Length: 167
Image (cartoon, rainbow, N blue to C red; front, side, top):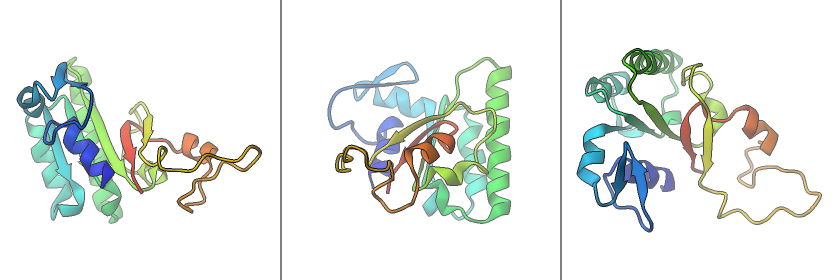
């Protein structure tokens, strides 16, 4: 998916198609190994133990943690445990005065409210924006993927951190 390609590229695991990207102070693709040493990636859909995999990814104190397909974790207890791990990681980074960011991919950003820490600062990236037809003047600002979300809904339920909205 486009979201997986994005998180893989941002963590230095696959090459960037065009241009350059700077992650953890290093330019991709030139410094891919340095980026990989400072980032962690958890593919939630493939994980049998999401919380354990997140703990393992955080053990190395990455500057960036990428979580792919977080909405594949549907158990409310697991989601609360993930939120607790991410909240603790953000707190540790602040106390240690070191950089820490999350890149989170999902299908529906509204489903992140119970998963991401309250203290996270939101930024959203919609990977479908380029593929969507232009909106007719005066037409309602609804999402073309038939989710029923308007642009206002998306703004109110935006990601708490960097995330890819891949349908």
